[in-house]
Length: 110
Image 1 (cartoon, rainbow, N blue to C red):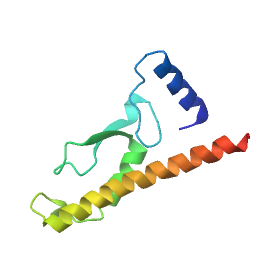
Image 2 (image 1 turned 90 degrees about the vertical axis):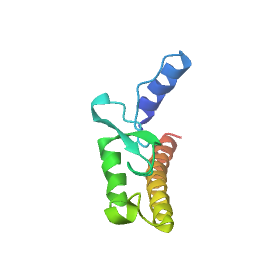
Image 3 (image 1 turned 45 degrees about the vertical axis):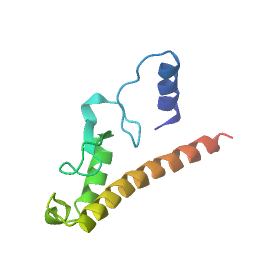
């Protein structure tokens, strides 16, 4: 999320306005590109987070490295756990990259 977008987001929160739904990773708030991502896979979880199409495709591509059989509801407990770990780890990695970039942008003007 760029500094300007972040500042607008914070102002809306301070005024008590509900900010628009935004990507949990990059902060994109264009409602036309926001999708709901099942964090632990569509078949395994009702835990959803809004993601823009770009972040969603990156995370889903990582999840899809496991075969559908390995991540299905019939998969072994170990495979289900592995899929959850991969899913959450990928989401955290994308979020971490965005936070690092934001921090670097903020230090440029210091």
